[in-house]
Length: 409
Image 1 (cartoon, rainbow, N blue to C red):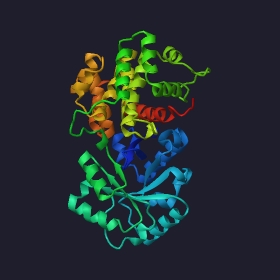
Image 2 (cartoon, helix red, strand yellow; image 1 turned 180 degrees about the vertical axis):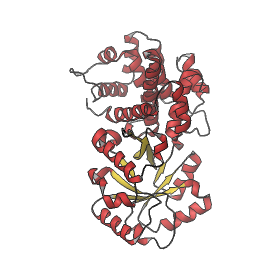
Image 3 (tube, one colour; image 1 turned 45 degrees about the horizontal axis):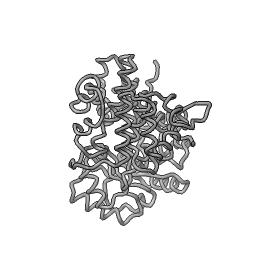
Image 4 (cartoon, helix red, strand yellow; image 1 turned 90 degrees about the vertical axis):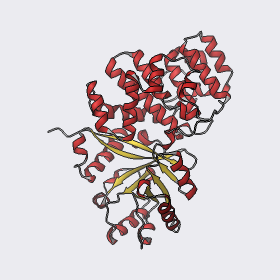
């Protein structure tokens, strides 16, 4: 019998500045019924083999940290020796009994340069032995109320560990954990709307929206070029992007006109849309909203292409996915923002009400993020798309995101 294919997903871990610090690598099994019965060692072995041999760790997490679940059996087997330890954090599952031999092994691994995290940690005395081996302690928020969480943080502050809040679902959760002194945060709180205020758009954002509108109308190249010339930084970013690892052109791209001719209207519009999420300066790959927007857009584009075989629909799917977080980014109601763009009614309906084929695709990627595989599988079955195809699209989108923009101008 053929072994089930194993895929890897990832969930971002954010620092106090709301930048991506690392990812928890998630085991994805194409046969859902087997996901629960497969042993931890087999699941972890599959993730390691995929990450290191099939995909390549750098292509999966870039220069960020990768958190990978381990149990006592895995710790003792040391199958993680295959992975470069600099970027890897061994996340010790809450089911591991912290016996004296396990604690000694953890200390030994720490001495060898491995980083360790205690998962779904529950505080109890005495803890000093294991705490001296851990670099990170992960606290599962739903297990605590505000008072008990405050008490446990006070206790943990006595130890030299970094605190990581898990299942952070709202901005309020983030702000409360931040105030308690947590160092890192995991969950999709950053993709949830906060109280909407009429935030004014920056000059850079206004230029990008104007560009997107001009591109969707397919205005003359000289009009587009003039918009780029209004913003020298944008000009530089486009040339850097065109000369990056994502583009295998033999000639060096030196002008906006050359870029426009090579990319075409639709691809340039996709790039401009993502650039809205990149923020001002800094490392754009550390922006959690950009990462989500890019992955949503690309996964939806691949899904639409597989289902419809229509490149126009696939382009619309990309724009819909990428713009599905635009209200969070700009902190304005989605209906107000869409008035600024020149988008089709299908895209508008999908973004505002999750209607139509494009609306269904947004629901699928949202369920993928929330790991609601059962419901997602039902929807995919209507389009004759196997779950493993979606997992494959997810990993392809991740690798593309990590390898885009690696080159220099």
